[in-house]
Length: 143
Image (cartoon, helix red, strand yellow):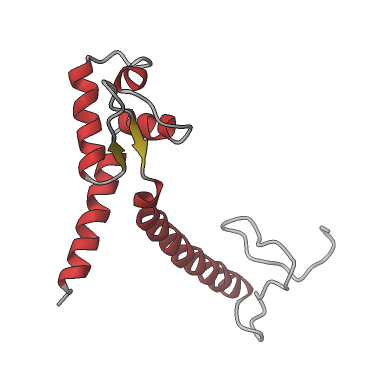
């Protein structure tokens, strides 16, 4: 059974990916990667109302991707890049796992293509497989 800490981390990861699933929020995160910005600055490129942008900002803020501070009457948004590290680590771990699996699959397919060592239909290493439906030939006259 997963520990409470594992469940919290999983929930945080889910919230991060849910927040980043929306293209408007991804664009906001990309903009904030260049530096802090006010709500008005973040809203400028979108055909959305300020309340609409504020809803997106609240989603990002709830999962910790952004924070808002107060400077006089301005409340600039700030990217909390560290909040993206668990998502980046999860992606990298899974990329590595799938790369290893694909490497194993490639090796297995090469072994199948070559066939058993004593098989007369065995394709020598470095030689391409024959077109589908055509048996390999030991005759070298077509090369």
